[in-house]
Length: 512
Image (cartoon, rainbow, N blue to C red; front, side):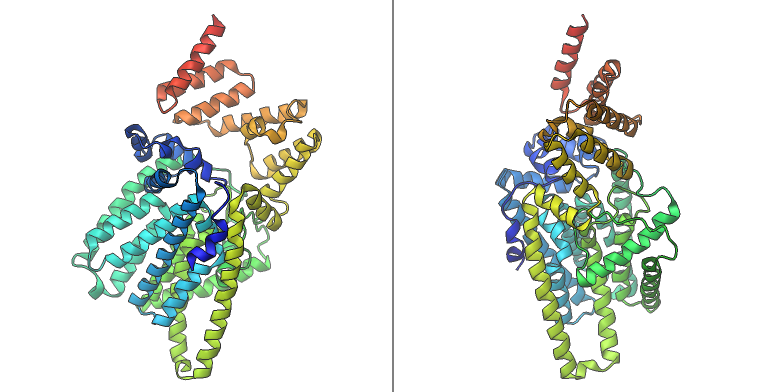
């Protein structure tokens, strides 16, 4: 089923971040000892490149590159199969903690065919998400009988994607709810998980120090209100698939009486009450609600980043919602006595089949988006006509027509609203060839380069970042600062030593 769902994505090219992770990543394409060291070094060039510490994810891609090279078909097949494994393991976990076989199977298929999961599966470089979830589920299943194996799986999951940290509180709730299913010295094993998470956290924070982005809104109150509304949107997306899109750019919620905010407070309040209620009763259902809550926390904008919402973020949240809803639904079904009424079972089954069929059709259709960058951008533009993707598509048409004034105007608005500062794309993308000599366009490039210099105003920079800093100074005509940045890059060390030496020798030859 997974292979059929994602077959429309099997052609095409590498898209968006796939270049950073795979097609333009020398560390993945050549597994030399030095490159292996760079992949596993949390303070090196590789984490700064991907803004994350995820060596297992990169090792998986390195193995794939050995087999498939630049043929995207194989990567898509692997992603679909890993997604199928994660869906199956979710069924097994739900069965272990009290779900009926039909209910658990339905939840697994629901997760498999959900349209919001298309981004996490059809986007090649999102193997980190599906592999981390599969490893997390395997760790939770192995904990009872093979705690050492479970600990290894948990570690691998963390090193694929940090979101896998959710397995720790979920495991703790499972042990607390029913210690008879836990291994001997279960709390000691979980203490080891805590230690492993702490060590990983140090590496991850080191990688995140090279990233960051301005908050979507400077007002903390607005960000908190927006976070609640985004949580409600995830719930709506999870239950109906309404609102799926690439590159979400929801508007900040500034009005405290916004109906969406009031609805979010009410719905999330009810879910919170249910979570606390079953937690007091030591029911396994609580672990799944906590799963959803903890998975949402990293993307809740408490720590702001450029895109506050994404379909792929639901990939880790959805298993928690499914488990909580399924176990709660089973309890309510029994209390209402509907399990004895065949008509109720038939109606519920028919509705479920209809929903799954619609979801499968939508996922099959959306998988085709991920064959080209243009289709991805078009999907984002269709759902957010004033967003970044739509603006950049309009800018491309302005620049292609040679309309420098409208090109510059649109890019300045994008810079102001979204903090967009990709000056290097304006220098390299052939789309801008006809406007590149315009004085206003050149001034914009210099301003964006200045934004980049301010963004990199911190003491510890990697070699790649220092080379980007040097390029920004070059654009602004600041030759002395450019040379100093290149000299710092050479001192820091990295994969571009020979290239840097050649550039600096050429500068010195010009000077003398």
